Image (cartoon, rainbow, N blue to C red; front, top):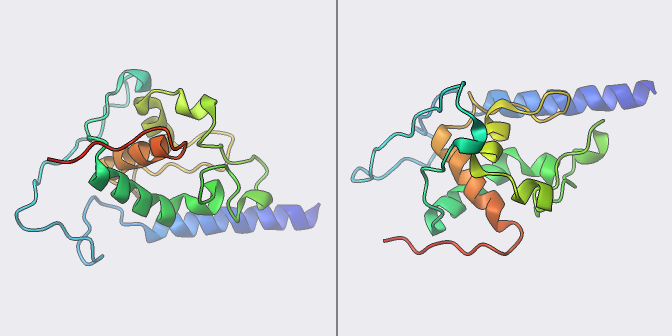
Length: 161
């Protein structure tokens, strides 16, 4: 029992360390992911806390670039718990008291984009799912939503213009 508690604490510490290691602002300066100078600098605002998550519409087009960026963020912040395929079988999953969500399941895939965004933003109370509001920019959280939609292999990205 004490070993299990210790392992859970280690997993929580690992998640906290990951969250602390993420930039606390929306800047990517010095990370090797700087936007080109001629890039569109439209910033996506944080939705209001009183908005119904199910009514939020995704402002980021699910094109190849968005999905690639979502995958990049996923591999840095989500894969440890949710696994490479999103099945909830990441390397830390066996140490968690509550299993990570299977992102390919009907339960997850049937949620509105705004509901998935809200879970990424605010975490899930009573589970190890952390809130990424301060660690991942709103745009990248929407990119994650777009990437999560592809984990079933059903959604094809739109070609960018």
